[in-house]
Length: 94
Image 1 (cartoon, one colour):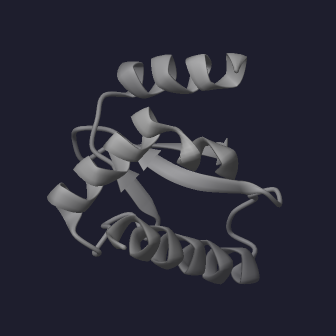
Image 2 (cartoon, helix red, strand yellow):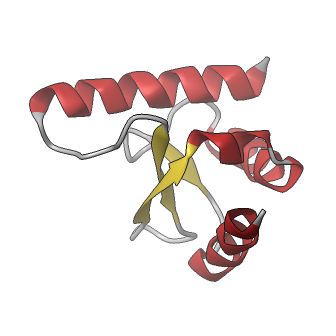
């Protein structure tokens, strides 16, 4: 499954970053990079968001745009920060 490959690669990149002490991602969370231009904003989200169909659509867009090579070293989502913030605020209310 393509989404599974994205997630595994992203999680392994996070583990490498955590082992060097360069990022702080709590257990049960995932760091993602969001943005449509070269300047991406980093968000730390609960892994449970990955089950939501709307979030899975963003993952499909990420796969189409980046394949399995994410320029930020972690999962990169190609959408505006405003759209992403709206989505995660809705998911946070569930």
